[in-house]
Length: 492
Image (tube, rainbow, N blue to C red; front, side):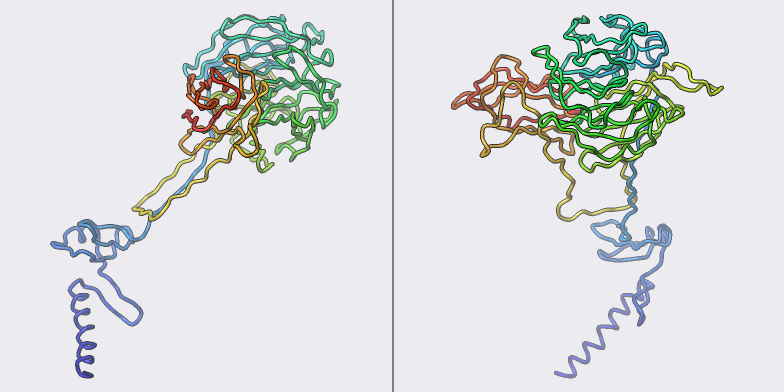
């Protein structure tokens, strides 16, 4: 028995050595050296054996013959890069100007008023065609230093100065009819260089030259209500925008002092909370917009016109510097976002002599262009995990409320395939056709009206419509209960 074992131990290395030497390999005390071949030599092997291995000297990689082909064993080179870019678009349709007003409604952008002496023309921009179209002049006449924002499918412009006279009037624009309608004057009286934004179906205007007050506009009642003063005090030429259910104001000036502080407003509690200071230098007359739950502030004047751009994440309360604005420094420009693209245009910019002149150029910003490059073979075993966005919670409107804490709260999120998902179990709201339940932010809106059948009351069904302007609307059903579960749609 001992002799058989010894013989086997002696024959095994001999057989192994014969196999290795047949492939010009070497086995030594410090390891096994497989044949070193070029790709051409490897491919010239007449009958490679399943499991045969060589070292490819062309790409410095082990090659294994498996499933009738040579496969690389050295892994792969993977490069992940993230970039953001500015692209020049068609120049603004009107004359070059500063101190204009801009906002977005659905898939279109709008710019109007502004200029050194005040203008009243108003223009619509279509990103799909890169074309500007003149619309009805602003209803309040010539204006500069005014405030603009949109709510649902309507736009609003108010305050500012007309022929050096400060104003408090407020106007609503209907793009469907191309008509301006005067509304209740802005609360708090006349003001210039103020800030405005919207949250859900409410509009907000505040601050301005020598002012710190802050007002909320109810589109249904056409009434202004005073809210808590801006947390940062008196402020002029600041930037304001909203992300989800919060409003933000930052930068600007107090007299001749430029500022860098940044504040968050919660309409549910009427409280201002100071956040991380703006990432760039203290400045006034900057531009801002919002893309996919992140805010952006760029350009402006810190003693000279600036071209930097900064991204704010409300989740982490951090600022990240992004690619500079597509041209030279700019101040008193207009910013808005359409379909996950940001836009900045007009304003004043230095000419070749360094003197500031009104500008009419217009630029598109695309954030977070992520590229993944894999060179070589990759095999994934098991589950490939990708991060999923957490639910966002909108502000419900028109008396709709959560059914009870035992059922899901109204919420939405967007997955990695750009599909938006809704959930929620609601009751008690207004059931008039086309009543708004809540409004989805930019980046979460379909490109066309989407219609969904939902559970509504015992044994009955209802209909919910989701519009390109973000409105999630009740069309039919009852208010004993209304389910949003199962509503999903792709966005571009």
